Length: 170
Image 1 (cartoon, helix red, strand yellow):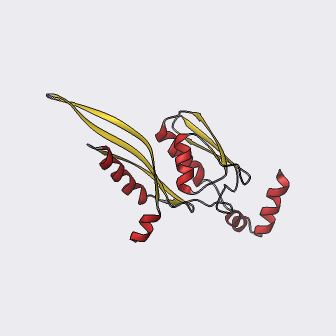
Image 2 (cartoon, one colour):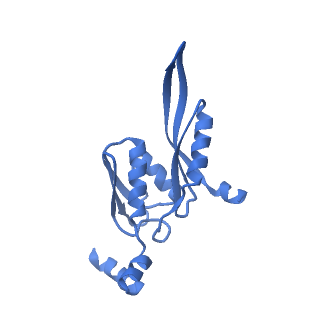
Image 3 (cartoon, one colour):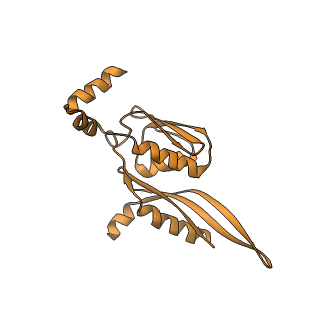
């Protein structure tokens, strides 16, 4: 189990300083948003809050490791198809890209893609740029991606039929 934990990449997306007003002044604590992934199709996120930044990041990364989800990737580097995700006022558009394109994405989405192991993807953030909304919208969109194997089994077809339609569609 300890060997798996070493393989995870942690990306710190955002840190907020939160003040609580008490008798005698203000108490400051920090909230951290962290994305964790294994670089091979599993990713998770979480938020942690503590009096120190390091403790908040540790709490968030521990929680994120327990919420990992598997995302199907094409050849381990890009998405199988284009997808749109929404959360709150945020909307993201994720598009599969050809090899060598790289990650074209803004801050919070870039962290998710790097932790996930995506190498070629084009994305656009529409609406809210709040990091919490962007991470959740991105993960919601990624959960709606399907591999040709899943689509073929649902339709009762062969995988080769599904993949051949992909190449003729463009």
